[in-house]
Amino acid sequence: MFARLLHIDRIHPNGFAEPCPIRWIDSFAMRNFTNDAIFDDTLPLADGLMEAGHRIPLVTLQAAMEDWFRRKGYLAAADSLLITEEPRK
Image (cartoon, rainbow, N blue to C red; front, side):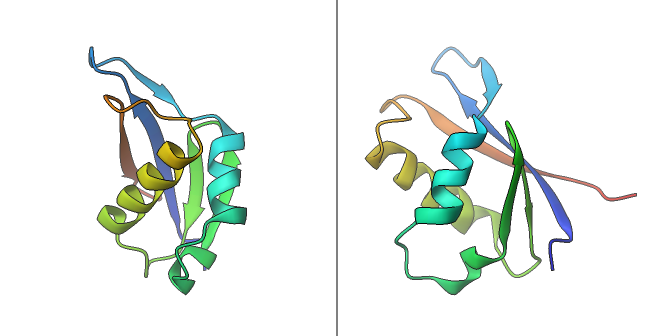
């Protein structure tokens, strides 16, 4: 089910990237209100890391996480997220 390892980074306006805190990721995974069952296939691991199932499109996940993080006040208007998948060995 959690076959993909995802890196979730906050990108500042100057291009500096830093891992999103696990409390942000956990907040999304536990309390998102998208009403989309695909987000049930997520498991926060650590700062900037999440496991996810294959049925979650990264573009959809990124948009939903950015929206949630902005509504919670975690991301400034000029910040963005970058979600990348680490190849499994």
